[in-house]
Length: 128
Image 1 (cartoon, rainbow, N blue to C red):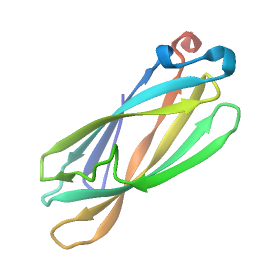
Image 2 (cartoon, one colour):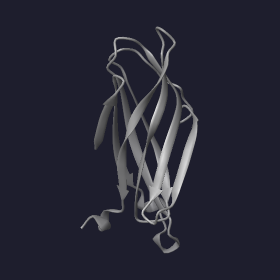
Image 3 (cartoon, rainbow, N blue to C red):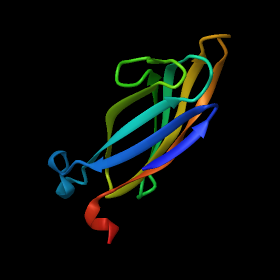
Image 4 (cartoon, rainbow, N blue to C red):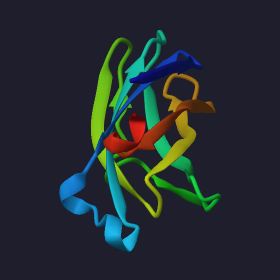
């Protein structure tokens, strides 16, 4: 698990290789990731948007951005956390992702960015 705090919001990420949804013979590797977002601020925040940078080990790069996460734009009160699971497909046995969440301080309506730490996605047999 990797974790990072920025702007008073702690982001933790765990990754899982999805062998049942992967097809190595066709260079298709599926990974799931669980993200926990914790609000350590003294004010409520709302997550509005996400922006991802995705890298395969062959140098292929993609960007993904959009509203919310898994169809939601959660509001977190001080001390609250929100957790979700999503996925990413790669064309190689390893890669990495990192990005940002655009959030709003619900007290003063200021918008700010929270960094999502870089995390690796590696097929288990490649870790030896």
